[in-house]
Length: 355
Image (cartoon, rainbow, N blue to C red; front, side, top):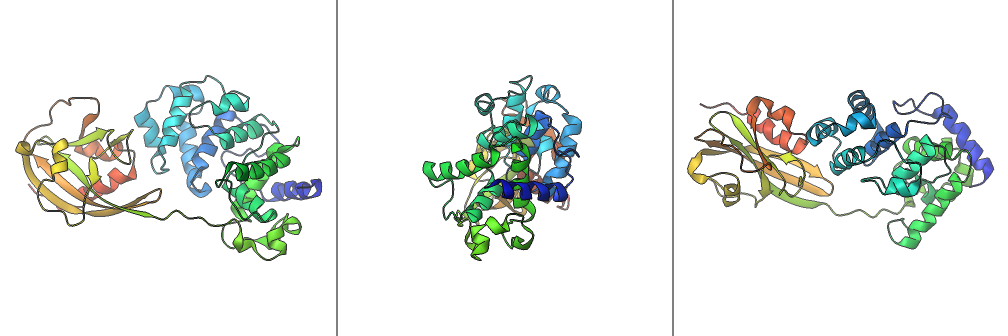
């Protein structure tokens, strides 16, 4: 990209930059590396409109890395609830407990849990104003259209290197921080996936796809087919009104507390499923009731789940391991940090209570 195009890009950004809680009013000001790290991690796979309130709430509770390092995983998940991809939150906590201040080199940053090439580049360019490149979905889309690249960086090492070379070219400037953020903003509000606003794009005269009226062809679409998954979720309640929560051993939530669940066929037979006996003693079951279904999506998995409400005839017993907890029924909605479990609990709360 030539200097004239980069100047047009900078001018456009100065006029059109959205007001965001992680973006200072002075676009040339260096940023807090902690805030850059949190915002950019939240923005992975998540829309800006969604992240805005999450970021504000997070920064009020965890204003710096020292405060975050003192938190436990359950609280961090609570503040992350709704953003999905919980491995991001887990890695944030791991990194917070590892560093007292952020490194200022790519090698050191990429050695930290959950910080890859993109996030490292964002921290180095936005916070430290280094000439470091970034490459996210917005820049991939822009470069694909600018240079009519009919392949994606995920296809091969050579393909990735071509995209990264364009990113490094843009970042080879004292204004790398502004070029990087300008392109991210351009991709978000102008060079969109569908119906790009080419008429208002500062790069339209340099864009091969726009000049050839072929923007819909770039980047090439390679969708992963959705995978159907049917399962059963258990709400196990003791006689003293406590709900069973499990940690680990679950297909989709291996490292956080959830309601027990397992894959099962549709129209399963009535009664206590054999898989449920991993969590409850059949001799202590008072009743088993199917209280509804819910749908949920996790990455490419399109899920449909039956919810079984299992009442026990005895009080909650002391857990045999730290992988099991009994949560008071009235506290369950605040305890679980994933919408999967909360959707199942809604079926219980909306059910007509029986003695």
